[in-house]
Length: 144
Image (tube, rainbow, N blue to C red; front, side, top):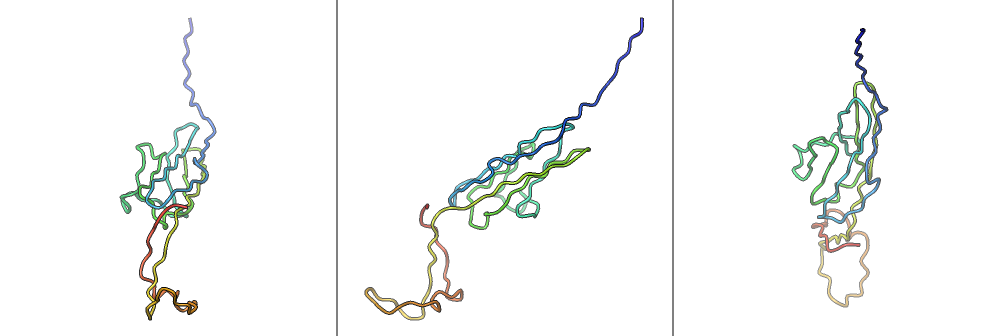
């Protein structure tokens, strides 16, 4: 009687897909991207925003799931707009996919003018009143 045993490494093509492809959220809301991965051997996952590595240590609003496949951004700001990319790699190959975050909401920009503006003042306001040095701050007042 001959008894033989063989061990095989199962290799399946690596795939990656970010879901959703595009999401629109208002300022102050949360956004979550999923990196849906298949393939063998099991890959590592690294996230990028606009080509730069995402670091949860640098921004406490960012969280990653234990397996690194879910990236969440709490209380989004305008600067969170961009392309979020997951890069997956195993010993044999690598793949990437990306999704876009668009920040909605209506922003009101408040300006300081050198002279007071009165109700009923019919004088036209021109571009010099809207120059950046006169910018006070930005307030978000609602959704689109």
